[in-house]
Length: 336
Image 1 (cartoon, rainbow, N blue to C red):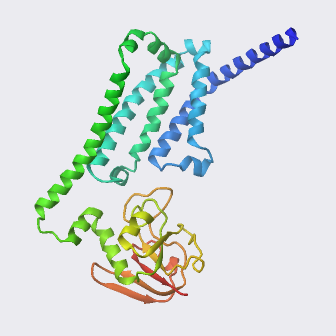
Image 2: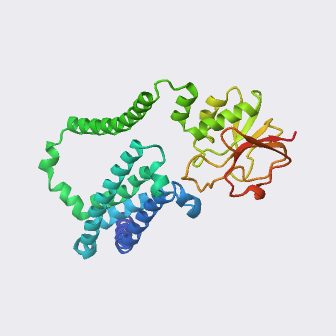
Image 3: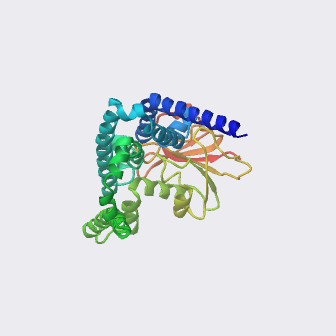
């Protein structure tokens, strides 16, 4: 029995050494893959890896952590030039991604939601993942680990209350930047327009495009109607947000559709109207593109907005191919 246990233990140790050696051999590939995935999520859109490669990015990061832990105990990795180079690269990238993350997040708060993406095509909040990849790679590397362990005196001086206070100050400062920019914008508008009407105030608050469009819908769609709206996400952050849109259109009911399909049964859900919405933002996400609906609708009539005051009424069906890539806004009255 003891021989069997000894044999099993020996085999397990051999297997662990093989895994450790394998992790050392392919660690640069794992590290590069994790970094590319994290950067791709930030530059394209969150979820792009799962959509096209059917891989959850969290699994990629988990594999990276496991590879770091195994490689750390490999003698070859300890003495290799590769480990030294990767540590230097990780520290440099940590500084770069950290600076970008803080700068772009604050730039977003000082302007408006999705400002950074519309200008630079970068999701600033997603930059935390490239930063995580390089920091965890350094922290779990042999050199990084020993640097932390060998500075126990510094670590001992860091008290729990100091950490809590520091985090609280960081969160407070982060929130104050966003709040102060909003207050500054509102006060500036109030001082410039002391006698502004309710419509002008709302237009300034939610953007002229969205407010004028909701006013158009209320004028042309009866209160007892049910309206099919775009899917939620950029470029329809407002027109596709059912809870938000319901506030402006109540007592009308709203129901989200899909990008290329109605996503709902017209008859079963008693839908009366379908929005025609180009999109209120320049940026997009979830692989959406401007223009909705992207499917044909059997219509009694179509009402388009031609400018701020005029509208154009068209009788007949809505054919997507006929209006594809045209920046249109309006409503479709469905044939019952």
